Image (cartoon, rainbow, N blue to C red):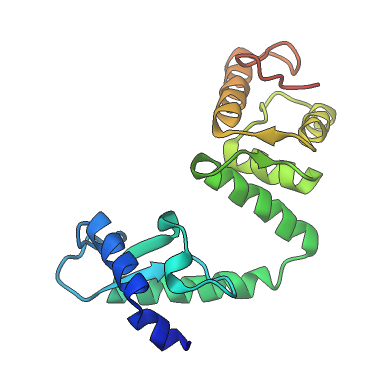
Length: 179
């Protein structure tokens, strides 16, 4: 079935209406209610039909905003192609940190992923030395973190900054800052 045929499929038409109704027939980017509305897929994956994507990855956008977002996504894709592999891995960690609230816990599978998670959540205390920072990031590798874990760790880093505490002197509600 062609993509055009899939967009005429009753399963897509039903999903499309659900997205438009969820957004109250309003562009989720600019709040426009007058112009033509589109349902934007946050990503595409080979083999998935338009109606098979999770609800949280479908957005109601006006025609203008849809075009703007498409241009931005093309730029992101081009820029990703210019990154070194370790930079892509760090960016993946950042993105995992940004989306952990909506999904299952995320795992820091490498030092670069841990660094990306730290960059998003601001887990490092300003008072830490380079050795303490390195030790902290290495302690994250191989562990999974929920949004609540990362929030507690972030609060701990804030408190360490505010009160001048050193790494290892404080723990956040049972989440160890270091092994």
